Image 1 (cartoon, rainbow, N blue to C red):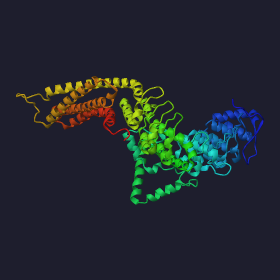
Image 2 (tube, helix red, strand yellow; image 1 turned 45 degrees about the horizontal axis):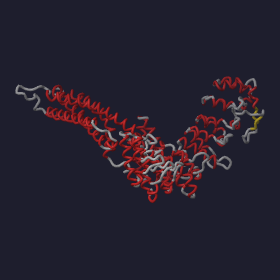
Image 3 (cartoon, rainbow, N blue to C red; image 1 turned 120 degrees about the vertical axis):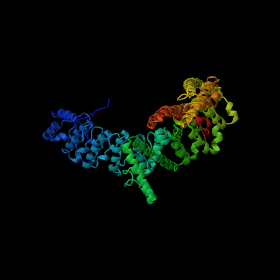
Image 4 (cartoon, one colour; image 1 turned 135 degrees about the vertical axis):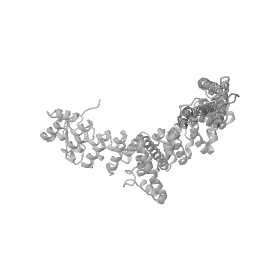
Length: 629
């Protein structure tokens, strides 16, 4: 339990306001009614007590020495109530603190009430620079709670002086840590530019290490579909710059100049006109489609996070090798583990020797990239490994595993569907194993670890369940697709025998001279042939032996052929149906053709939306370039 004040009087830490905290104020006859009225928002009672007892405005109503203003703020009273209460208070009274050294501005900073904070600061401009007993200014609490608007406002009013500079030493490191943890990367970027030592100063965890633990702060950590990616790419650069509260102020020695540089680069009239039009169009779209605003904020966050990584690495590389290594080891390996190739690339460019960093289990960045299945990370370090490539390829961890042993194990983190979009996980695992097999020396492919197992033995043991699961999945999918293809073949064959419109007395089709009949005949034949191809393709899956190597090419090939044939059969059947409806119903009234075409497109569109994305991923995975190309 938190200890209460042991003495009756507690000295305030407020300068220029000589006041003694009398904890016994809570025993006054009016203190309890005042406390209840403040919590309930009953202004009539509060006003009556304030007028009858002028000392009540500075009274301590709780054992924690909370003033009426602090009680009202913590009770969540609205702005009108707070304004009326402030009218009874001199500016010095706002600086009264509770037992923990917190002013009312500390309280509204925790709550994120920016409007109330503005009222307090307007009445007493020294409030942003009051420290509580935990060594926190209001801006620290706002950043810790993740209140962006409040944090940026307090940043603009917090004064820098010799006694309470929030941007240096431990206070600056704490603010930097809170800003990065809350995702305020633009503020953190300013802090590093203003105080470069904050790039490596830390009490608990470095800023770069915090960034390495947050994959969503970078584009590599996002899983955009094609439409989201196009919208993300369309966001105007002007709307993802630093906010005005940080750009161009007297506190910003870096980004005001870079901002002006960008402005000078855009003096070309046509370029500036295009940018303005782009911004206007985006803002109009934002008002119509609310999710666009979230995408813009996400892109701005990604941009600022990447700039922050660059800036921090630029400052750390100026240190001596030993200190830089101790600071960068954690972020580099954590970034590799989480698949943040932006961090890995920037650290390698600033400190090439980082490729030799090892974790406590003697895993290198190569090992981590293979263990967590991060293709881009492996490709980056493979390209920049240089003279270390050979030694890292034969490096063993604490259990005697080389990199091929590690990739033979199952992925340490289930990111396959997220990062590589692989439909057939077993195929992806085999591709990883085959690629790493090329990377190691020939004798390492059959070496044994501390448990006496070779990489191939481990692979077969670890992937036995996955192979069984995918076998059942493929059998189930083949069964469903075979049934669908058989139905299409039956319908197509029946339609070919009973031609639309019947036949004439000489046995020829009634509509044989119509162009639509030719379209019917061709599409019906394609539907029949493609559906039979689908049946044969999926039958070959039923008869497969399902060995491990079959999952690499044989089974995916049959699955791809079957799905493509099924899509063709569905499309051809709808074309045949549309042609038939035109022949028998729409020749005299062409308007009937419009709903027919629309309805015929529904199953084709539905099939395309549901089945084409995984089909395209299978085609890319099977016939595309290597996972490291």
